[in-house]
Image (cartoon, rainbow, N blue to C red; front, side):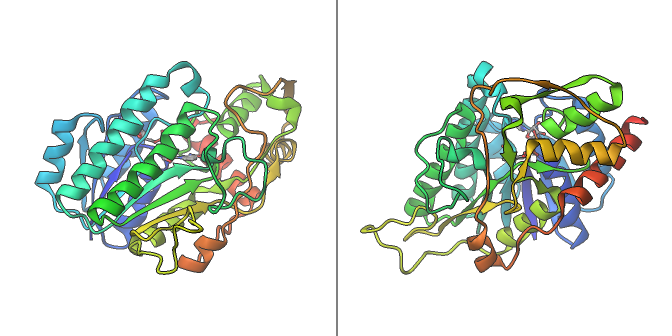
Length: 335
Ligand SMILES: NC(=O)c1ccc[n+]([C@@H]2O[C@H](COP(=O)([O-])OP(=O)(O)OC[C@H]3O[C@@H](n4cnc5c(N)ncnc54)[C@H](O)[C@@H]3O)[C@@H](O)[C@H]2O)c1
């Protein structure tokens, strides 16, 4: 298949493209290589991708309507995996407009491209952050998600709403994946696990928010990629038993689906730090801090729908995943 992957130079896009190429797909990757975090890391990922057979890369901004139209005119895609976005909850507090440009205008351009060229299936990254102020856990796709606590979360929820409209009006099959804290080699320097490893190796202290009373459903990158590929292959269909009398938010009378993809095993922040300490053989100096604006104290994914529909549930233990991250980190940064 010929697959468009947006956010190609990003953490998840980089890993996804490698797996798609390994199974024989051809990939067109796009990214604007913005400097939200080290551009050199994005360039290094990209250099590895460009060396693979069947990968074409274009530097395009998702919000650039003309460039996006030209992209879809030049290629007929069998699938679109949309991962490009302005990520990060905390950054959205200071830089809200970046999220509207990349995540709302950008998503609109992806939807239009898919509609105009009749792409058979669009899968796209949503986020566990859509659960916002919800307290009932594990988080289920059947729960109402109308109380986001960051603009980042609001843009991801908007993507789900926009996708539903296109599935309904234009019969475009769409599947949204709510990722739960993804980590692993070649990961994102703005995320806590990355900052922790860096700080501990430097002998610096680490900031532990909400005095450590946090937990996350950490999901290893290879599990995320497996889930994305399975979901992308399986074109979203209508739910025949869907009814407006009791509207299930995760499916529709239109070809629209939303899935959680998380480890289904939340880990407390302090246990997480302990695992990093064990893998590094070093102890962290902890700086306990209050809760940050826009953050949520815990996430825990109900993944039964994903399991039922694509027969997959993340497998990698935190210990294995952190070990692999630490060994990549030491090699990449030569520490
Ligand atoms: N990593 C996680 O824990 C996590 C959790 C929930 C959701 N997500 C979502 O998954 C997707 C991939 O995340 P990631 O962790 O790989 O992040 P990432 O920042 O590493 O990758 C995103 C890529 O998109 C590119 N990009 C951003 N704005 C763009 C624009 N306007 N035009 C073109 N390219 C643009 C960036 O340069 C980056 O390379 C994102 O949509 C993110 O919101 C990630």
